[in-house]
Image (cartoon, rainbow, N blue to C red):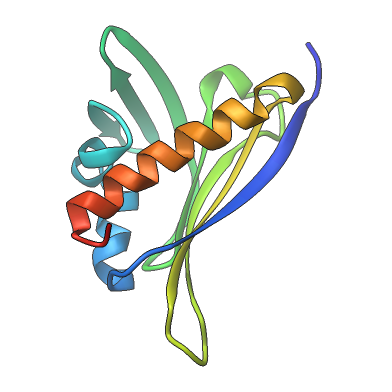
Length: 128
């Protein structure tokens, strides 16, 4: 298996960090924009799209700030994906920071996918 490449993205978003955190950290919030449905049992989250299902383990979360998952298929690796809320100290501008991994030839596709998902999130929040 070839090594995956880490990539990061930043999306400015007009929403309060506390509201945003509900959308990135809860199964009901994530199923509004990230997947068709999301279930969780403790640290195990199941993400459902159409007929496919992927399981991820919750690695860490910091209330109001970030959440980090590892896909079970990547369990023996250091790969993860993280959704973080960043607030500019001076301007108070809010951004969503994405850290993810993809195989070299799939990075652009991964970025486009995040672009579309964050765009959906912005529409739900009325921040488009």
